[in-house]
Image (spheres, protein in one colour):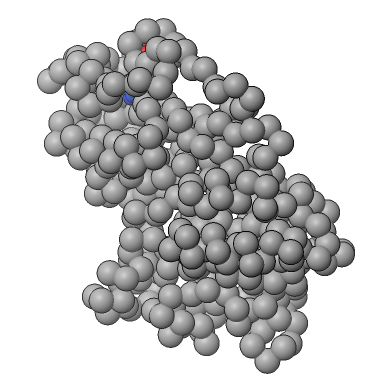
Length: 333
Ligand code: ADP
Ligand code: MG
């Protein structure tokens, strides 16, 4: 974009390389799946016959979503991963992305690592970077992702039915547990932290699962704000309630150690940033879902069921219901 005339202290990116040189060097790759990629005023994209476009945007702000000194490779990965996760939750096949980036300065070592992390993940999922915007400013990363899905197979939030089983992929709470360690709320051993940190820094979007759930799941969402908050969006959109079995929640061996404590329970139920999928499906698909789990080598766990009403009730290990208020978790008081 052009020079911001509203800000007299704005400096266009001139040294050590021009803005266009920067885009060419770090953010321009072949885009055989697009009619037109980086370099013109807009990209030109064509969805396959019979598919609709699934479009989603996620922004990562320095100081809010990551620390300013975050490892640039992992930041590049995460910037795209959180967007791929939205495609997964929609049952969409990711195809293209744009990247809007504000940089305080041109730091070539940083750009090299950031783009390496971004493209390593993009290559893994066949996603092409077809455009974006580059400007000077406080570090800010914003990706828009475009995917494809047959219109009627998109996994929406509003399809959960009474009697459906509720499932989650992978394990819950590791990202929040790693963050709690970094923030000094708990003390993990080096091995324990090493086991949890990838969930926080290198989340794995469940794209293959999203595709496998087409025609099976009645609703789906990715867990970015915590199980209860995100499942809550499904319940609200579907106008139903949920009963969760606390003992069935899939947690890592490290988190298991903390499950008697409030903090551990909070990580599992309300911890954000795991980017696992939470989905519902009719009971008749139970065996089918277990075989998807086997085929993908990804644990899928039934954690409860959809019932009539509103809200979410969690039963603890001894069968006592714990009431959970809308929008947040009540600290097990
Ligand atoms: P305009 O001024 O027409 O908006 P820009 O100068 O912002 O164009 O960008 C030039 C080209 O580079 C466009 O095709 C744009 O999509 C692309 N682009 C800009 N920044 C990025 C980036 N960070 N990653 C990928 N492509 C980018
Ligand atoms: Mg532009």
